[in-house]
Length: 200
Image 1 (tube, helix red, strand yellow):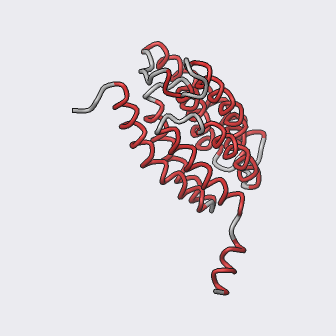
Image 2: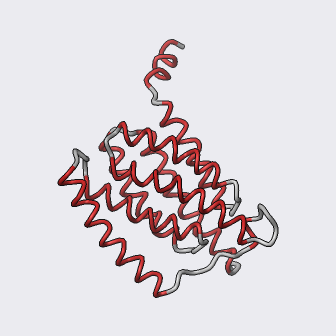
Image 3: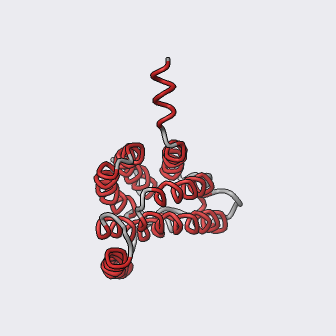
C-alpha cells in the first residue's frame, strides 16, 4: 500500500488529467459527438501547463492554438447543423486537391520558420521535431473541425513523432496518451470513412 501511495505522489496530476481528458475527447470525436469540443478544451488548458513545465515551447504554442480551435470546432459543429447540438447534421467529406496543396505548403513553411525561431531564440529542446508536430497538428485540427476525413492520416504521423519526443523528454503519461492516439487515429479513419460510404 505504501508503494502505491509513494507512486501516486510522484505523478504529475496535470499529466494524469491531460491523459484522461485527451482520450475522452478523441473517443468522442471518433463518434462525431459534439461534446468532444468542451472536453478537448479542458485537455488543451491542462496541457498548456504540462508543456510549459517541460520547456517544449512549440507544444505549448500548439495547445494555446488547441484552446482556440476547440472553441471554433464547438461553434462550427453546433451551427453547421440543422438542430442545435447535433454534430451529425453535416457529413464527413474529403479535402480537395487545392486544399491539400495549400495545407502542405503552409505546413512546410511553418515548420521551417517555427523550428528556426525556437532553435535560435529560445532554450527549446528538439526545436525542429517539436515544431513539425506542432504545425502538422495545426493543419489536422483545422481539418477535424471541418470534418475532413484526411485529418486522421496527419494525426497518425504526428502521434508517432510525439511518442518519440515525449519518451525522450520523460513525459511518460503523454507518451502513453499519444501511443493510444495512434490506434485511435486508425479507428477514427475507419469510422469516418464508413460514415461517407459503408464498407463492404
